[in-house]
Structures are given as C-alpha cells and as structure tokens.
Length: 428
Image 1 (cartoon, one colour):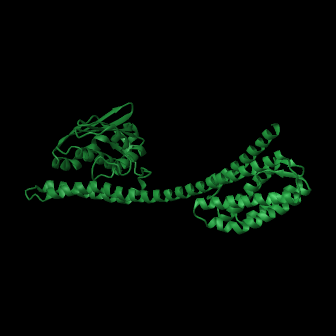
Image 2: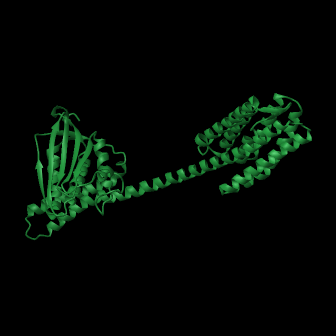
Image 3: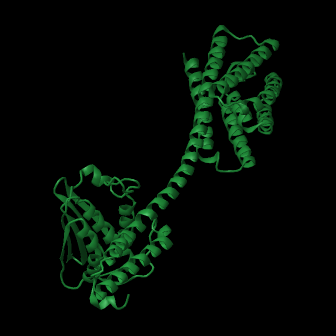
C-alpha cells in the first residue's frame, strides 16, 4: 500500500511539472516572440520538464527508472521540430548517464534514439494537420509506439518484474496515454483561442475605424442641419437685410464648426483641450440658443433659459458648443409633437451646473445605462456616437454628465464642470 501511494505521489508530481511549464509557455511566451526564440524557449521548458520528471522517478526493477519524461519529449519535438527533439534527446541521455551508468542507461539510449527517429518522421505530418482529432490520434499513436519500444527493450534486457511491478508499469503507461490526450487537447485549444483572440483584435480595429467614420458623419450633420435651416429662412423675400446678415453669419459659423470637427475629430477618442480659455456660461448658452432656435421652431418646441450671475469655467469654446448643441438637439428630437426645452445654469460648491431638460418621450433605465455606447441610440436614425463624444469632451474638461429620465415625462441631462473665479480667469 505504501509503495502504491508513493507511485501515485510520483505520478502527480510529474504531471504538475509538465503542466506548469507548458502552461507558462503557451500563456505568456508563445506568439509573443519570433519562431527561433520560440523554439529555444520550448526546448528549454521541455528540457526542464524532462529533468524534473527524471529527478522524481519510481523503480520496479534495479537500474530501471520510470517517469513521464516521454510526454515533454514528444510534445517538445512535435511543436518545436527536429532540432528541439535532438536537443531534448541529448539532455535526456546526458542526465540519465549522470544518474547512473548502468544497464538502464544503455536501454535508454536504444529506446529514446528509436523514439527520436520516429518523431523526426511524424513531426512534419503533425504540424500540417488542421483537425484537432487527427492531431490527438497521431500523438497517442506515437506515444503508444514509444511505450511498446520501452516494453520491448525491457523484455530484451530480460528484466524480471513482479506481478505488482507489471501492474504498476501497465497502469503508469496507460495513464500516460490519457495524459497525452489531455495535454494535446488543451494545447491545441489554447492555440486556437489565441488565434481567435488575435482575429478579434483585428476586427476591433476595423470596428473602431467604422465607428469613427459614422461618428464624423453624425457630428457634422448637426451644424449642417442648422445651416440648412438658416438657408431656408433666407429664401423668404420679405426678410430684412439685418436678419439676412445675422442668418448668414450664423450659417458661416456653423460651417466653420463642421470644418473643425472634421479636422480634429480623430482626437475625440482621447480628447485633449488645446485652446483652453475662460468661458462665461450665460454667454455660451445664449449662443447655443441662437443656433438651435430655428430648429426648435420648426418642431414646435418652446425654449426657456434660466440664467444666474456670471459663472466662469475653463474649457475649449468650440467643443463646449458641440456638447451643448448635441444634447439640446437630441432633446428637441425627443419631442416629436412639440414641447418645452429648458436650459438652466447654477453653481454650488465651486461647481458649475448646466441642466438641459425636455418634456419628451423619456427613456427606460436600460436605455440610460446604454447611452454613450457606439451604435446605440434611442432614435431610429441615430448612431449613439454623439453622446459618446459629448461624454468624452466633458470628462476632458474635468466634468461629469448624468442623466435622469421617466417615460412619457421627459429627460434631464446634467453637466457639472469645475468653476473658476473671476480673479483666475485672466490668468488662464
């Protein structure tokens, strides 16, 4: 019983050596280095596995030591090639010679030389196979032939094992076939998952490109829509020259904004504020009202503005306009039958707050949670990227944006940005 328990300990120890080292290779090394370096690392890891397995063997006959060195020997030769296999053969025989120069050493020379020749013939076919099932079959057949060679050599050397010795040896090598099956299975699965992950990363890059293209279209559409509204108003022949000049100026401003969006939109994924200046919120919101008022009038939406004393923040005027126009436009479009859009400015605890409130259709908790994710929008023609860009810009201004909504009642977007005092505004 004690002998059986000892053999079981040796078996588990051998398996842990092999599993740990090959796990390290496939998890952290393979695919991250070139082919030659991969062969070197695979050879070193397989050699260490062989040495550790041979350092903890069990023996059923004097001079003959049995362990799982055959597993890393075969795996190393299969995945590393003939050069790795030859290196492992040299390491194995050298260490066996150092352990003991006896009849068991000569049997090891014969056994593993034949197995190496077999691996040289089989290894190229193994690497060409695409199906996992065929690779496993080939590995098990090779392992089985290796075990047969070992048993034949044991017989030729007239090793007389006891009944328990033959039982232990048979169980040991039967389990080795099972272990070989699982090792090849897990290695191939790990390689396949690595390939799939690499392909997913490439697809993710393509997805990002398409998202950027779609979001540019979305963001540019806002100023173009406003400009289109002003141009339609200019068709009115009874319009006074003063109004015409005002509409033309706003149209040119919006076209300029569209040009700026196109030129620097690629920086929005990680927005940086280059032209930071003090911004007085009441003044900026007044500009937003002028821009969106014609669009609101077309949709029968009444706009209200609740302002307070001067409130200054540090930011980039163009990008702040883009954020506020985007949110306000979404609010207007959320009221297909008309309604009220309210813009409020307040300050508290050195923070400036801008609230944009609509009386539209509202949103569910799930819709609020998904706001700002690419290609999600509550509008049938929306991309969801406008809100994503808006959130990124507000974060770059060290602010945050929150949303509250109720179905059938309306939605409130609240933007909170650090406030600056009047004494500092001239030094920015």
